[in-house]
Length: 319
Image (cartoon, rainbow, N blue to C red):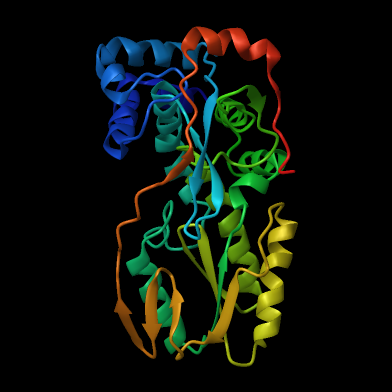
């Protein structure tokens, strides 16, 4: 534990973490501080952050609760952390993720974080050649929103017995958020848009892959979609039923209607590309479309953030 704390809070690791979030870009959080603004006096800021983390006095500011348009145009929650908090999360992920890799059976080159479409397509072709000719494409609707916090933390503790790291993850999961009108607290889910989101999501998707593997099916992940491949003697109807069933047992939900089943040789859209027969037609590694914001709260400001904590409420329902 001492070694991990030292590694996370070292100035070298914190600087690498900032460079990672800097390269990813992004908007300011509730405090209104931009990447350029935080870059000024970077070393003192990083030293202060490392000190706060090491002395257990670090406390994140509320997330900025935005609404973005999904691929189908439907509204999706999207949360923006402050630059300081994104740096802290990246510092933890940079140390923790290599340790978690040792617990995964899957080839780490295939689906780190959100996955690579080229690797996913090659794996699908290889499985097809091995007789997995039936395919189920399923989107994980509300995956990030519905995961139970206790289930996430229990899974993390089982793989990583470090109270310091688990404590930070819990603080980031049970976060406060600002929607432009009031502060509220998240009651479930991994905040979509968080630096920690891909790492925490993989804890469950790898577990799902293990369960499916024992049942003779193969799982391919790409982004927030998954593809389950099965052999011809495995009824497609069963393939449709098993994924929502397993996902429910893992404490998150999947929309059972967001699936498409067919034989692999038929043209169908899968993994973000068009497959036909034994060929991958195109496109490969498409750049993601620009994010469209349907609701973007105004920054709250540091002093208002701190003053509003006493009035924090629970997250509103979807009703």
